[in-house]
Image (cartoon, rainbow, N blue to C red; front, side):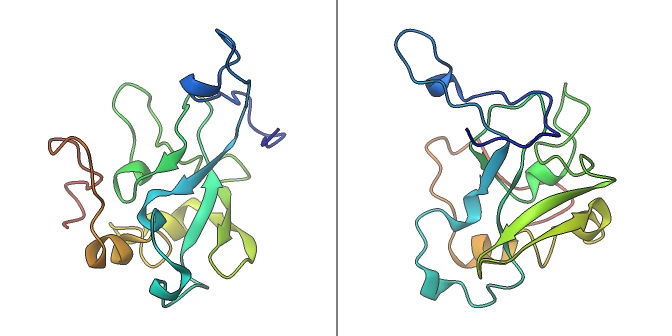
Length: 143
Protein backbone atom coordinates (compact mmCIF):
# COMPACT_ATOMS: atom_id res chain seq x y z
CA UNK A 1 0.00 0.00 0.00
CA UNK A 2 1.23 3.43 -0.93
CA UNK A 3 -0.72 5.52 1.53
CA UNK A 4 -0.42 8.39 3.99
CA UNK A 5 -2.25 8.07 7.32
CA UNK A 6 -3.52 11.65 6.83
CA UNK A 7 -5.21 10.78 3.52
CA UNK A 8 -8.89 10.07 4.13
CA UNK A 9 -9.53 9.19 0.47
CA UNK A 10 -6.75 6.90 -0.73
CA UNK A 11 -8.55 6.69 -4.05
CA UNK A 12 -6.94 4.18 -6.42
CA UNK A 13 -6.71 4.84 -10.15
CA UNK A 14 -9.54 3.24 -12.14
CA UNK A 15 -7.12 0.65 -13.53
CA UNK A 16 -6.14 -0.35 -9.97
CA UNK A 17 -9.48 -0.24 -8.15
CA UNK A 18 -9.87 -3.93 -7.26
CA UNK A 19 -12.85 -4.35 -9.62
CA UNK A 20 -13.17 -6.89 -12.45
CA UNK A 21 -10.05 -8.83 -11.52
CA UNK A 22 -7.85 -5.72 -11.29
CA UNK A 23 -5.42 -5.36 -8.42
CA UNK A 24 -6.38 -2.94 -5.65
CA UNK A 25 -3.70 -0.30 -5.21
CA UNK A 26 -4.87 2.50 -2.90
CA UNK A 27 -2.54 5.45 -3.11
CA UNK A 28 -1.88 8.79 -1.50
CA UNK A 29 1.15 9.78 -3.53
CA UNK A 30 1.52 11.21 -6.99
CA UNK A 31 4.48 11.62 -9.35
CA UNK A 32 5.54 14.77 -11.16
CA UNK A 33 4.58 14.49 -14.84
CA UNK A 34 7.32 17.00 -15.77
CA UNK A 35 9.83 14.21 -15.07
CA UNK A 36 8.15 11.55 -17.20
CA UNK A 37 10.61 9.98 -19.67
CA UNK A 38 13.55 12.11 -18.52
CA UNK A 39 16.94 10.71 -17.56
CA UNK A 40 18.49 11.88 -14.31
CA UNK A 41 21.25 13.62 -16.29
CA UNK A 42 18.58 15.95 -17.76
CA UNK A 43 17.66 17.25 -14.28
CA UNK A 44 20.20 19.93 -13.47
CA UNK A 45 19.00 21.14 -10.05
CA UNK A 46 17.88 17.93 -8.32
CA UNK A 47 17.63 19.46 -4.85
CA UNK A 48 14.88 21.89 -5.93
CA UNK A 49 12.36 19.83 -7.93
CA UNK A 50 9.72 17.67 -6.25
CA UNK A 51 9.37 14.33 -8.04
CA UNK A 52 6.76 12.71 -5.72
CA UNK A 53 4.19 14.41 -3.49
CA UNK A 54 0.72 13.81 -2.05
CA UNK A 55 -2.54 13.89 -3.97
CA UNK A 56 -5.75 15.37 -2.60
CA UNK A 57 -8.33 13.01 -1.08
CA UNK A 58 -10.90 12.89 -3.95
CA UNK A 59 -8.43 12.30 -6.79
CA UNK A 60 -7.31 9.07 -8.47
CA UNK A 61 -4.49 10.68 -10.45
CA UNK A 62 -1.11 8.98 -10.79
CA UNK A 63 0.66 12.12 -12.02
CA UNK A 64 0.49 15.78 -11.12
CA UNK A 65 0.94 18.27 -13.90
CA UNK A 66 2.52 21.53 -12.87
CA UNK A 67 1.47 24.29 -12.90
CA UNK A 68 -2.18 23.33 -13.50
CA UNK A 69 -2.44 20.96 -10.53
CA UNK A 70 -1.19 23.59 -8.09
CA UNK A 71 -4.49 25.43 -8.58
CA UNK A 72 -8.03 24.48 -7.59
CA UNK A 73 -9.53 21.86 -9.92
CA UNK A 74 -12.94 22.87 -11.24
CA UNK A 75 -15.72 21.12 -9.35
CA UNK A 76 -13.49 19.89 -6.51
CA UNK A 77 -12.69 23.06 -4.56
CA UNK A 78 -9.06 22.03 -4.13
CA UNK A 79 -5.95 21.38 -6.22
CA UNK A 80 -4.86 17.86 -7.18
CA UNK A 81 -1.85 18.23 -4.88
CA UNK A 82 -2.78 18.00 -1.19
CA UNK A 83 -1.12 21.34 -0.43
CA UNK A 84 -2.76 21.73 2.99
CA UNK A 85 -2.99 18.18 4.34
CA UNK A 86 -0.27 18.43 6.96
CA UNK A 87 -0.56 21.59 9.05
CA UNK A 88 -0.99 23.79 5.98
CA UNK A 89 1.59 22.00 3.88
CA UNK A 90 2.55 18.91 1.95
CA UNK A 91 5.40 16.40 1.97
CA UNK A 92 7.63 16.22 -1.08
CA UNK A 93 10.37 13.88 -2.27
CA UNK A 94 13.00 15.56 -4.42
CA UNK A 95 15.10 14.22 -7.31
CA UNK A 96 18.19 14.02 -5.13
CA UNK A 97 16.33 11.70 -2.72
CA UNK A 98 15.70 14.03 0.22
CA UNK A 99 12.19 14.59 1.52
CA UNK A 100 10.72 17.49 3.42
CA UNK A 101 7.52 19.19 4.48
CA UNK A 102 6.72 22.30 2.47
CA UNK A 103 4.15 24.97 3.20
CA UNK A 104 1.42 25.57 0.63
CA UNK A 105 2.97 29.00 0.15
CA UNK A 106 6.29 27.49 -0.93
CA UNK A 107 4.53 26.00 -3.96
CA UNK A 108 2.14 28.87 -4.64
CA UNK A 109 4.09 32.10 -3.96
CA UNK A 110 5.34 32.02 -7.56
CA UNK A 111 2.56 31.47 -10.19
CA UNK A 112 4.38 28.55 -11.83
CA UNK A 113 5.36 26.91 -8.52
CA UNK A 114 9.04 27.51 -9.19
CA UNK A 115 11.53 26.24 -8.35
CA UNK A 116 9.80 23.17 -6.87
CA UNK A 117 7.19 22.35 -9.53
CA UNK A 118 9.35 21.23 -12.43
CA UNK A 119 7.84 23.79 -14.82
CA UNK A 120 11.33 24.65 -16.09
CA UNK A 121 11.74 20.99 -17.09
CA UNK A 122 8.49 21.19 -19.04
CA UNK A 123 9.69 24.29 -20.82
CA UNK A 124 12.90 22.52 -21.89
CA UNK A 125 11.28 19.11 -22.51
CA UNK A 126 7.60 19.63 -23.43
CA UNK A 127 5.18 16.87 -22.46
CA UNK A 128 3.83 14.72 -25.25
CA UNK A 129 0.09 14.72 -24.69
CA UNK A 130 -2.28 12.40 -26.61
CA UNK A 131 -4.91 15.13 -26.81
CA UNK A 132 -3.68 18.51 -28.07
CA UNK A 133 -6.62 20.28 -26.39
CA UNK A 134 -5.49 19.03 -22.97
CA UNK A 135 -2.84 21.17 -21.35
CA UNK A 136 -0.86 21.05 -18.10
CA UNK A 137 -0.51 24.85 -18.20
CA UNK A 138 -2.51 27.37 -16.20
CA UNK A 139 -3.49 30.92 -17.26
CA UNK A 140 -1.27 32.35 -14.50
CA UNK A 141 1.79 30.47 -15.78
CA UNK A 142 2.67 30.59 -19.47
CA UNK A 143 4.48 27.84 -21.34
